Length: 361
Length: 255
Ligand SMILES: Nc1ncnc2c1ncn2[C@@H]1O[C@H](COP(=O)(O)OP(=O)(O)O)[C@@H](O)[C@H]1O
Ligand SMILES: [Mg+2]
Image 1: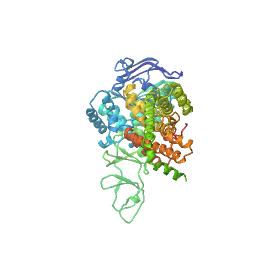
Image 2 (image 1 turned 60 degrees about the horizontal axis):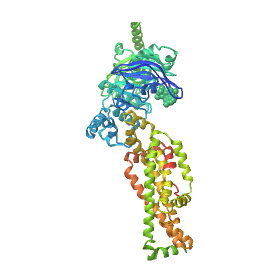
Image 3 (image 1 turned 60 degrees about the vertical axis):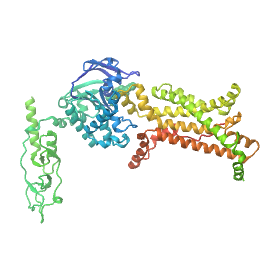
Image 4 (image 1 turned 45 degrees about the horizontal axis):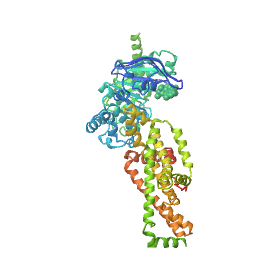
């Protein structure tokens, strides 16, 4: 558990970066600090491992005032990941990851063996260990950064905008990886970002900061989106917060129906409705428009590309999107294996949301 | 013809033996250069590391370095020689004073130039100040530090000729004698040896540099350049500090 008690930080030039912060980060959770640039997120984070010391107030880690612990010792027990990864360019990837075990007095052999385990844990090839940081992509460097932070198995992991510098596709992969690692290792993670989407995606609790280092709201993401504490939080979480809140609606109530389908390779006979074309593996390939006729069997070039696919059981937001993006107006539902499961209508999703809202009161 | 004169001077066996012979002159010159650069490094590297690591005194250091660069080496050596009443020490001190600023600048720039994220991560991982200096800042400063040493060596080689003005031999002797009696063969021949020595010493130091600079850093400029080419951007900014502080420059004599 990490606790901020009436913590303030004023820099020498008079800037108040953090103003009277009271906040408890529960052990074993991912807590996200989010807010516009310059609102004191990094400063707050760095007071946990004493990269900065508070001007007043107390920071406790597991009930112990951090000011009582010698900084190097404290930091060896707290994982630290930063935006530019900060890998040591003169050391191999393996030796980068072995840094903290070596500092803690492990033998070189043990430290390297441990480092190799961690590379595997974060999904990197063993071969990667022999490379140098400059030979890695941005996403790979961040994985190494995470492996290095986890090497001595610290109970706490601090991450300062770790994925902000990588492109969106890679970023999403890294976020999933972090969630998987967290489920596996159960660390207490404090994660800083300026991106509200990232915050609600990975945070169990989210602390929204405003200019001047003031905590504006500290809540579960669903609550944050549904009930922002004030205008600042409402505008920060964005105009489409209602739509993004769909990520937190229980999808169990959505009834999946059978739809009209056809198969690649079968004869084409004109139909009055849209037909969903499946391949031999039962995977959806696209929509056949009403009234299409052709001499030969059904081929892909007769099809209109489909919308997004909704994987059964995942967030309701995806269900609504599948219906909205489908040319036929019917959202295509698939099993986790990718096999066709059925279709749904947008109105069904809205019904589920209404029902849930009525239940919550 | 000047080439003929040089050839005559070079091919005279008389010039290749004895205390005034070419081998002895080269040896003396080499000794002054190596000793002066080594002493300078002993002073400048620790000082540069300290200032770069703590960030304290950077302004003083740059100003002091520039002031020293402005000193005329020949004047300095002459004054020291007169004060000390002769001997090799004044010459060496003059050369050391000349060699300190480039090494200091290279070391300081090398440490200052280490990526801020890397330094931050080093502390954040739990390195003490000393561990951060030895394990992270020094290895990463080596390319620029070595650039400073090479720069210093080139200047010292060119300037060590001043030793001859105060009667201490070295390759300044044939320059001086050649000038006095207008023996251009000897003059140009001596200059040729100074140039040759400078090239050879720089070559030697480039080998040393290859040996001491960590592999991960030697890969860096190549990969960065490749990435730049791939992106089609011509951005030479990562090299800017190298150009100002690290690379051997003209190395022109100030004697
Ligand atoms: N070392 C420093 N000296 C003076 N002001 C600083 C320093 N570090 C940060 N600040 C200021 O403190 C405020 C909070 O900074 P920071 O915690 O980095 O914000 P964030 O991480 O939320 O973008 C900003 O106004 C910033 O300019
Ligand atoms: Mg920040």
